[in-house]
Length: 103
Image 1 (cartoon, rainbow, N blue to C red):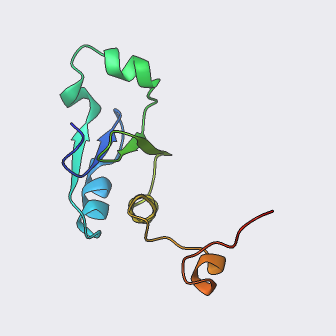
Image 2 (image 1 turned 180 degrees about the vertical axis):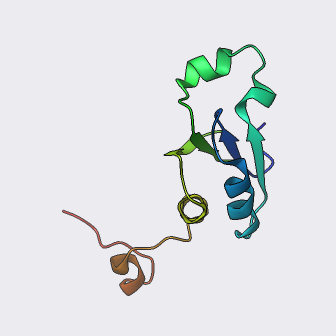
């Protein structure tokens, strides 16, 4: 399931059309799948404690990067951008991406 780009995994009730729309807006491979399509027994849903309407963002290394509750397209897109490392704070930009040492 993972390893071939990002995965947006939707619990029952999640807006998969919004997830597909957001996935199309980022410069990376993103698959969108319904949890019920990959978890026919419910074991994964139970292990994740997935709630209705949640969308899970899974990185290629299988790390869960975000769990979004009933997210809008822009929220999903922002989570994908953060997962890609494209979201920077003002401090990071002013230091050219290098954070100062903390003592």
